Image 1 (cartoon, one colour):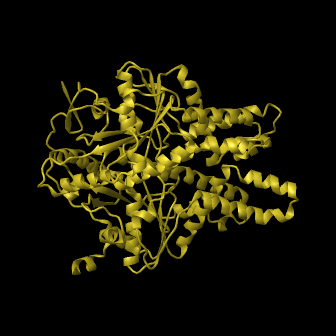
Image 2 (cartoon, helix red, strand yellow):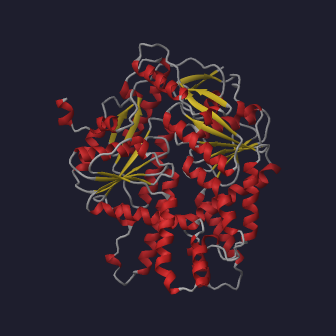
Image 3 (cartoon, one colour):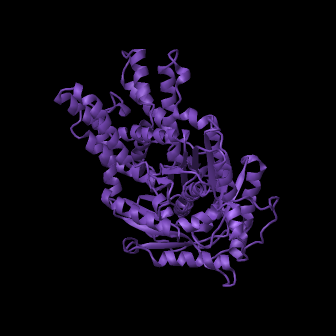
Length: 607
């Protein structure tokens, strides 16, 4: 029997491939890696395969921007939901907002009936920041590690992109160190939060993660240099945290059908070069390779086919409403430069090419006689490697959480220490060494950069969607705090970072997506989140368009049907402006290649 999935056909009764992480699976399987490498597809397919084999499996997403709902066609909740058509499989999304509210209610309940309304209000305000959201999410995460074994044979974790995941997995160590011998606590945990109980829970979570008999970490990558380099970095970070049972899964390995197709051959050759250059640290790990498929991994038939051997016949691509050539980044750079100054924020799902687009647009502004500050809020920080060089007039920076936290601690200590005795100074320093301080420090750095747009161009390469929305939450919380404090006392003169982001003449939001169902859906969801905050995106960039590059390879041609469908979807009202960037046979790394993407028309025409 055959079923049709998004313009291509796959067999419904294919044999499972020999994937090492499924041969002898541990109780916990963590799929982690750079955004866009296919963590959700592989983790969901693995969970489905285990359930089809008769196991009881819980699939958990720790990504605030999860797309499991679209992939499985069900509504995600903060409690396990059975997956129709997959007996033995349940799915759960650790929703940060729900987790934080549940955490707040538990802390407030512990204060007892004697607490005044003012005390309750103060504590609720203390527990309104992104740090509390992070702690609450980890609280649910650690509960699953501790209690899930009683209900499920396996728990499969689909994690957020690397930087956010490393932060999550480092929390047990960070908080265990902070809580050791600390009887006072931290505001984002609440005044009556049972710190010693939390300490025990964090330690139990760290022990479970570090036990190779219980936990396997699958480092997911694509056959490209960037994601492989990040996998190597992540592997080292995980070893430092004690997570040593690791495997490497290389997703989307492609082989051209014929050597006459330049685009197909370039894709294969670049992939092979990246695979040949895998660093020794990753080469030493057990490895699985998953071929590039002709279909999008949406729906159970496609997910079941992802980790199987053999492939069904490929259908011919369908026609599309969108056949006109979209404008490129050079035109977008022209429009942005005309403003003279301001903030340009490049946002989107992990792995869609935000860093490439941000770096190219910054160079485009330089080419048009402007100066620019290019910065990133992404913990994984790829800017330096993407630019690979220096340009007069371009300042490049990174909001480094560790650096900003120390800078913030030094600032507070310098301001307050002279008025305190030695014991009070020690208590203040202890408070500031809480992991909560990082949230505040990063927000202050973000605010400084946003304000620079008053007199120059600032191009901000943001972290993947979920992490960026936590930063936006902090921005909203600060705005509400300032509005309350200055109400009736010059509030009209207060300009908060949120107000600058809401000002369309000051800030232009660029949403980057790939021509695939999941990235487009997540860009649409991000757009709605921004609009609820009063922020209107300026334009969308469709990155890595194979349709724009041109190919006759059967597998790639079959994928074009899905690309056309997403272009139709965007053109039907999702995006007010759409610009495109074709899949490039030469990777857009380094100043020379990035500059080609945004070269002014007059200069390009003269060459």
